[in-house]
Amino acid sequence: MHLTHPDASIYVAGHRGLLGRALVKKLRTHGYRNLLLRTREELDLRCQHSVNSFFESERPEFVILAAARVGGILANDRYPADFLGDNLLIQNHVLDAARKNGVKRLLFLGSTCIYPREAEQPMQETALLSGPLEVTNRWYAVAKITGVVQCQALRRQHGSDFVTVMATNLYGPGDNFDLTSSHVLPALMRKLHEAHTSGQKRISVWGSGSPRREFLYSEDMADACVFVLETPEEHLLHVAPDSMLNVGYGNDLSIRELCDLLQNVMGTDCALDFDRSKPDGTPRKLVDVSRLMKLGWKAPTSLQDGIQKTYAWYKSECP
Ligand code: GDP
Image 1: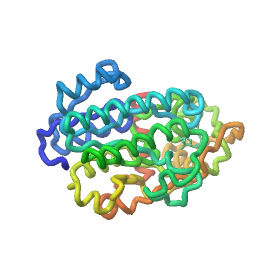
Image 2 (image 1 turned 30 degrees about the vertical axis):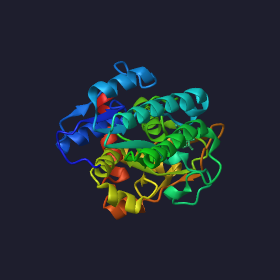
Image 3 (image 1 turned 120 degrees about the vertical axis):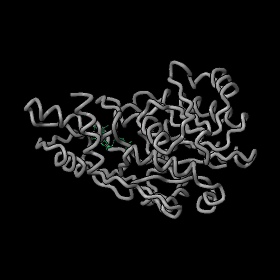
Image 4 (image 1 turned 90 degrees about the horizontal axis):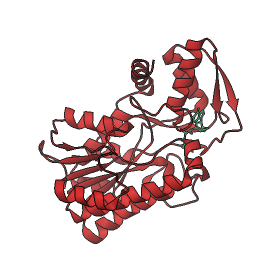
């Protein structure tokens, strides 16, 4: 059942993450005033007992599962057991408790990196499970694929209205700027900023610079989530019979082109040293957004504007 009432209780799991904070802001702007929020310290989603108690006492009507262990290409490689195990625990506990407690609709956050490495571009939702995965993030991918399929299984067996939104690479205010665990866009933003302000004027860019990636502003992703929550079930299932919806910007660029755009917006002119000892990962990861467009949603923020806003935030928070 879709979201209509401003007093509906909505549990945003992971509200301090990149997407979670954008979701809280967007839901409030849309007039939703009954948000349930718990920090990791208040509610450890890896603990089944705590998750069950929370759902039994708070009885959320809607859930957005934006809590997950996430990270860039090296973090995935370094902590495989955490990326697989923590994500399985979090999603199993939340999906199970949501089903048992009659949640009206749940949005599960999938990711475009769980599609097969060689999937035809742009990747359609139907590409899931059609081929081998990219090795650098298969731990995360296997966990998330299980979550997508579990949502489908719960719908089929119990009629639970659980929907998966497949997010492309997100960026925005509040992103992780740690150079070992972050994704490429915040990492390069920080490296360029620091090289420019220190006068050193060279940065290391991992890999060859040729992989192509699509980037979506976190507030646009939040907007898409609210849009999907508010879409009646029959409309949604009409365009997405497998209850999966890709969310992307609609076009991609190479890592080298991303460096150029960042430099342009940030006003830096650093030399780029490509470090080929670091992995390239998947060659390309562009999603087909036609399902969401058919429902009437398109990403409003250009990459240039999104970078500008993110850089303004970065300079004010991490000078
Ligand atoms: P992916 O989309 O899962 O591969 O994850 P990332 O966002 O971490 O990496 C995307 C691409 O950017 C890969 O080809 C990386 O090698 C490349 N890259 C270039 N420089 C960096 C960097 O400083 N940090 C990260 N995380 N990736 C980088």
